[in-house]
Image (cartoon, rainbow, N blue to C red; front, side, top):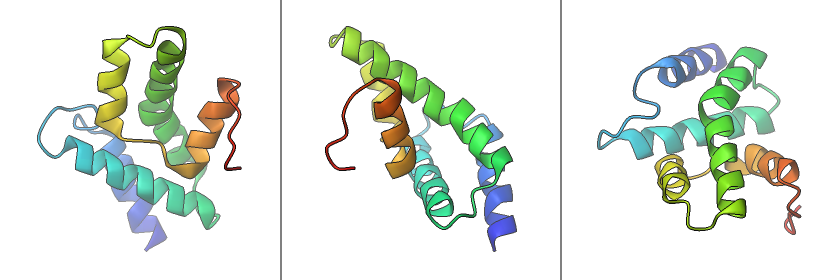
Length: 106
């Protein structure tokens, strides 16, 4: 199952729909975040999938968070964050660390 899940997630991350605006983009992105987070928590997240997630989800969201920290009125960042809906526990904490923002839930 893990092999099939990794293959399916890589296909979704590499496809044109990851940043798409179709009516299923938010749901698809949320499922990707949930699955990657679950794989990481169970020690099954492979390097290739982690790198693809970082490139296509983590980095754009992290940049948007940084822009919001420096400019709370940054409309583009709000739209980007709304589209992705979140990063999951692991990558959210990583973003907070990168932005030097304390995570009180850790």
